[in-house]
Length: 275
Image (tube, rainbow, N blue to C red; front, side):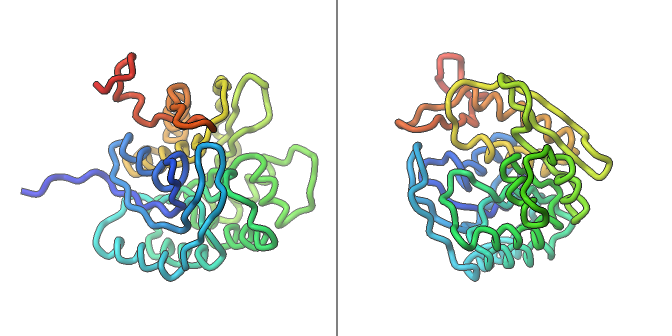
């Protein structure tokens, strides 16, 4: 008798030795939501809890082969795309995703912890805009990242263009845009969800003390897991924010750098021992 498997999610992203961001963080968040994570490595990170010191990008053909072999063997309920590595990798991932249009895609390609990619950075933004964003069910982006991306189609501006830029991305084919870190009360973190009708959600959460690494990854991975479980996007976005806030409230001090979210806080007794 075959056991019923958990929903499978395929994530593309970087490997982080700490497990704070990237694929390791995705897998932990998927497991916390009752899903099984499959992974395709786009780059290797060298770093600790304080910083990422270097990145080794994986050849695009290897990225393609990793994904194709998995997808020929297993049915995937959702995709997540994190750090993409390079322009050729964006092309490879976009071609793979185009073969699975019915599976939801959560796109969260910008890791602020990564070093700047120099002259290629704008070309990479354009590739993400043209090839991945039109296929995304949900695009997760911070206000700073949204501003940088928007400068690939408009002039830089100090005006509040968050809603206008989000709607431009939806016009490009993205179904939902989730903007994090929206300006507001200094004691809160505000996030806004947009679809073709305009702003759907505007959620605010108490700002927690400390510096964290992995909050954004936890948020987008949890949303992907919710979608894989059949939850609708607006509800998935709220539930993932709630989970991420709790994971940050119980964050680990693993090293001398930033705090790391505890994605398994729910499995521990108040004294920190496993249940």
